[in-house]
Image 1 (tube, rainbow, N blue to C red):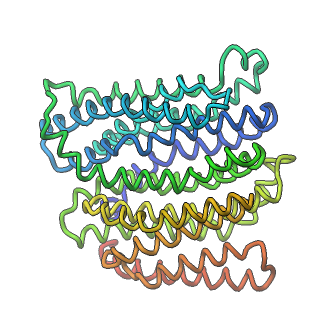
Image 2 (image 1 turned 180 degrees about the vertical axis):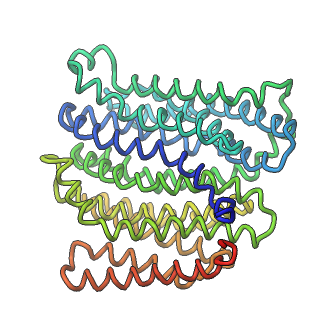
Length: 467
C-alpha cells in the first residue's frame, strides 16, 4: 500500500473528485427546474453566458499551471517569488484579454438582449484569476481548499440559481435580479476564499521580477495554443448551434454534453494530482510507474463501470428528465459519453507532455487536425444534424488520442493491448443502439476479458512492490 500511495495519491484524488460528485447531484436537481420554469430563450442565454466563461480556459495562459510545475522541488523563498509573479501576471492578463474578448463577443452576439456583457467581463476576470490561483494551490498540495472553492465556483454558481427559481417567485427575480448575476456572486466568493489561503505564500516581501515573468513564456505559449484549440474543439459547435439552429436544439445538445462531461470530474481530479507528481520525478522509469498506475486506474475502473451499469444510466435518464426526455437527447448523451471517456484519457496523457515540457508536440498535432475539423463542422451545421456533429467530434477526439499516445508509447506499458481495448470500447458503445441480445452480451464479455488481461498484467508488473 505504501507503493500505491506514493504513485497514486488517492486521498488528494478523492478531495479533487468530491466537488465534482456534489456538482453532479446539483446538476441532477437543477436542470429539470431550469427546463420547467425558464423559457427556452432565457435558458439558452443563461447557458451561453456560462459557456463564455470557458474562454478563461484559454486566456488564463496557464500561468498557474506553469507556476505549479516550477515550484516543485524548490526552496520556500524561491516558491514564493514564483507565486507572487504568477499572481501579478495573471491579474494584468485577466484585465487586458477580458476587455478584448468581451468587445468581440458584444459584436458577434449583439442581438442577444438577455446577455449582460458587463457581467461577462467581470466573470472572465474572476475566472482567469481563479483558474491560476487554484492551479498554484494544487501545486502546493492544498487539495482540501481547492476542493471547497471548486465546488462553489463551478457547481454552486451554475446550479445554485435554480433553487431561487424553485422556492421563490421567479417573475419577481427575473426583473430585479438576473440569474447570471447570482452565479457571478458565487464565483467572487470562491475567488476571495482561494486568495485568502494563498496569501501566506506570497505576501512575504517579494517583488515583481522580470526574469521570472519571462520564464513563463515558452511553456505558457504552447499550453495556451493547445487550450485555444480545445476551446475551438469543445465550444465552436455550441456557438454555431446557438447562432444558426433553434434554442431547443441548442438546449438538447448542451444538456446532453453537460451530463456526459461529468465523467471528466474523475480524470481532472487525477490529472490535478498527477501533474505535480510527474514534475517532481526526474527519471523516466519513475514517471512511467506514476503515469501508468494513474492511467489504468481510470481506464479499467470506469470502463467496467460504464459497461455494467449502462442500462441503469438509460432508465435513470428517462426518469430524471421525464417529459423533457427525447430520442435526440438520448443519442447525443451516448455519443458524448464515449468521446468524453476518450478525452479523459487524453488529458491524463497530456499531463506527461506538460511535465516533460514537450507541450509543443501536442500543439502541433492539434494544429494539423483543426482545419479539416472546422471545414467539416461548417458543412454539417448546414445539414442541421446535431448527431453528425457529435460523431465528428468523437472521430476527432479518437484520432488525437491515438496520435498523442503513439508519440509517448515508450512510457505506456502494454501499449498494443491498451489501445486495442480503448478502440473496442468505442465500437461497442457506438453499436449500443443498433445491436441487441446475444451480440451485445458477446461483445461485453470480450471487452471485460481484455480489461481483465490488462489488470492482470499491471498487477504482475508491480506485484513485488505491492507486497
